[in-house]
Image 1 (cartoon, rainbow, N blue to C red):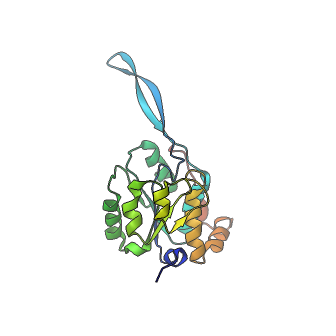
Image 2 (cartoon, helix red, strand yellow):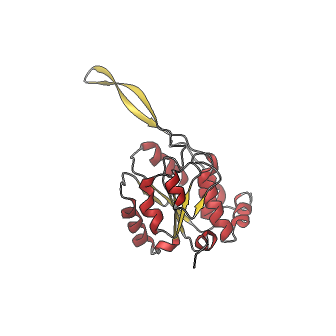
Image 3 (cartoon, rainbow, N blue to C red):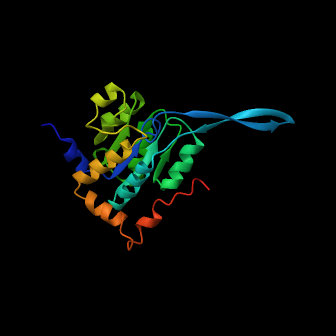
Length: 202
């Protein structure tokens, strides 16, 4: 019997995301910055990425819904570390070419099963996790073979609200989306204002 994406979503306790192409549009900007080394003027490369505020709100909504969130990415970037700190993500794994290694660590740490984990990806490096986890989600800009193996494909692209779509799909299936939104915008709720007040890494 085929299990629907909604049924899979009802079991989810942890949502994990790739970064490039999911939290961003996949673009990576390498900016040369002048530095002086041993008295010689040279330059070093600084990496920059663009993130979407809608996806930041998604993390707060997920937390209000009782979900934990994290990222697993092959690249190592200070911008990712800053954004993860900004969003107060529970799980942050960089430099992971084989992402199931990180998933197994998260399972051991959190006591969750594979069918309680959702993963949001866009490229073939994400397939091993997507094939094993409870709910595999591809963003709209994902490679076609990744979308073909996903249980759900978001209406929006990575970096343009795709991560938000994924979280809202899960919360909707769990029957908590409206409650989470109400809590997020309730000025008397002491929890939600402190969740995602980003300081830009400052």
